[in-house]
Image (cartoon, rainbow, N blue to C red; front, side):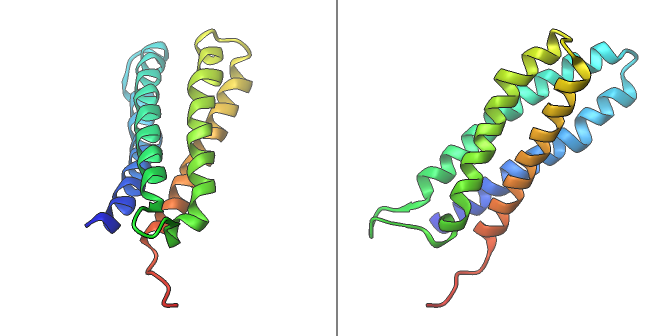
Length: 139
């Protein structure tokens, strides 16, 4: 069961990014009467998503080391960089980019940067999911 936890964490991370960023938030802007209402709710969803990303990333970091043999798990060799990069992007968006968007300071630039970082985080999570779910190589 323990060897399935990395796949579960990666799937939760990638799936939650997909559901929030590509379904829930666009539906807010399509269905709420004012863009400001949709933006307010989107900010709340993205903040919650940051915590999901960090929790999944931390779990993956903890599970990367095999405590019995004191070695790095095979899936982790190729995935840890993407885990760390995805976690860093989540933090940068939440604490660096989002405050600028809320202040409406150069909105087009900061929104574009936030979207790019979110998409790159999604890609990192997808690559981590791909690595954790790959069959173990036979050595």
